Length: 177
Image (cartoon, rainbow, N blue to C red; front, top):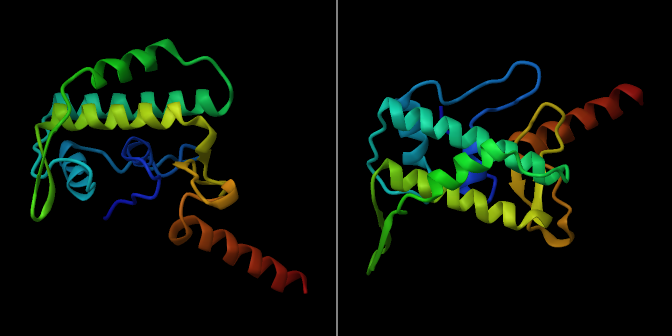
């Protein structure tokens, strides 16, 4: 299983590891090795991270806190204090180190640093609330930053949701014709 990184923000991509939060939620992070694979596929984190049980459960708490805070922002509510505490605590850890060489940027750090970067990234998205949206496909609850011209993006991504919505609309038009 490969993960999807369509949110435009690694913190929001972490919240997208639950494919839907309606009806039958599908959690892609069931064990520490799943989080290791997700982190390896996320190009904005240090490579070669090893996740233990404590880090895994902290990552899940961070994911749920970021999701809750984003929904609070989308619905114009005050931030949930418990979720805010989780994100602020995780963000307080030192982020990964960064270096530049002829091949590009290299990030270095442990899982704690990676989680700090994810928390900080999520905070940045929350500060940019005019661009946060939830996917328009009814069964998708993925959050993303809409930086499209005129802020007209309706789905988290064309491959997963946009094509499904368009295909369903096409089939519906064909049936009614």
